[in-house]
Image 1 (tube, rainbow, N blue to C red):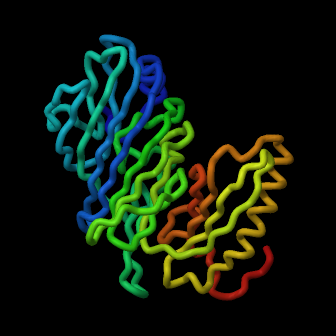
Image 2 (cartoon, rainbow, N blue to C red; image 1 turned 60 degrees about the vertical axis):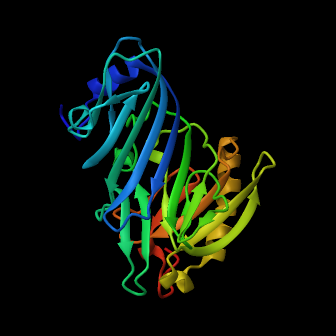
Length: 289
């Protein structure tokens, strides 16, 4: 197997075998230390009966794999960052329990410790093929699905994703966030941002009359430099302009903008959870340009 590379031919062949991906159910545990986090994925999908294909997962410790209720040997089934799926049924359920690894290069789930106050922050960057560093996927944009995410984090952390942030379930030193199911989307625009972020909330009225909740966030040590009011004003004007220009109402339920540390790009258009390089939180007044 070619490992991290996915060729166009492989993607075309996999899409011809998998007719639809019904849903992802993903549970992440970010309370297990500063190197690994828990990742459990359940995928329901339809396929050509009797065919074989593969799922994607970058992990150095896969605990268990079950396909349609049958346990598979993790060592032999997970090779070269792929999970072999043989003799598929018409309707399938894949369940994978693994430990995935935090990254420090802006891929997958990046983890950063702020030297200003010692607080840890995480955020995802999945474009183009790195959702598979966080959960088991069919990592190609034409195999879209809906996603239901549960995230366990240290007490006091906020968690953001594509769906609105729910109130956490508090249990000792851990909080658990259970997100509603998302709209249908590709894996690479799903998002997880977790940590003691601080920010400002507001709302706007979309062109179809819905109330869209807004949020602007950054890490605690730079929050005093975040000009959230101006960002919210520009966002409202941007929504009005683009909804009018395209004649299409904003298709998601909320719009968070989060400035994150050590970002290796400028920004990423995750659905409803846009991340920005926090070097754009200026400590002194910039020029208008």
